[in-house]
Length: 102
Length: 166
Image (cartoon, rainbow over all chains, first blue to last red; front, side):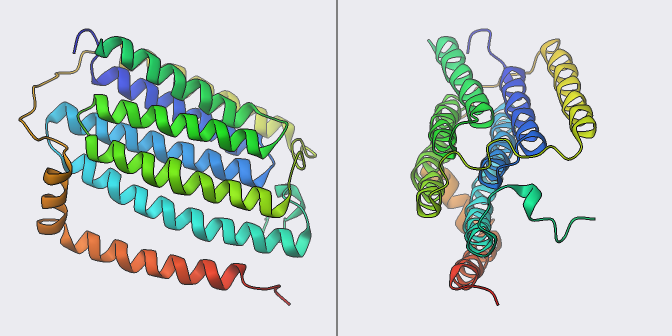
């Protein structure tokens, strides 16, 4: 595939993962933080699929599929928690919901 | 051709990921950037001979998960709120951001100096048939556990979102 190797895909995955980590660190909107978590999960999936291509074995793709299942469940439960929080507190700012903060 | 597609898809994925995090106006714009990022990643999966994973990426992520995000944003009518709240610990956060950026640059530098082997894969690698056969023979326990997890997730979502907590 020309001059593109598995390392290029790993670098893209690392960039997307760190953009997601920055989003969780810097943004205060719960929904945007949740989307950043999704970005990080996707970066991990890209890394898995790239390694799977690199060693010519499809186990990485199966693991990526299972990560997607877990991500779907996580989104459903997390958004339900956010809906419940917004109903009771009327805010999506993470600083306003600090009951469990140490 | 493949090299050009790789650069197009990866630039789109990284730029729209930045759009998700850097958009301060409305969560809806972030969700739409997220769709672009997911679709670009699906293109990268197809470039990696993982057609099935790319298809599932389009259907589950771009088709279902982001739509769920949009439903919730519009249901709660959150336009523009919470974009830039009070910063409680700006120094700690700046330090954390600095560490993340430095680690990423170091990782990219290390990775870009290497060369990975790029073997040819056999016919049918990563197709629905290959992945499906593996899932329903060697990994059937994982599929069962995933099914139970999905059921638990559905029940939990219904219970959590049902009514006000006293």
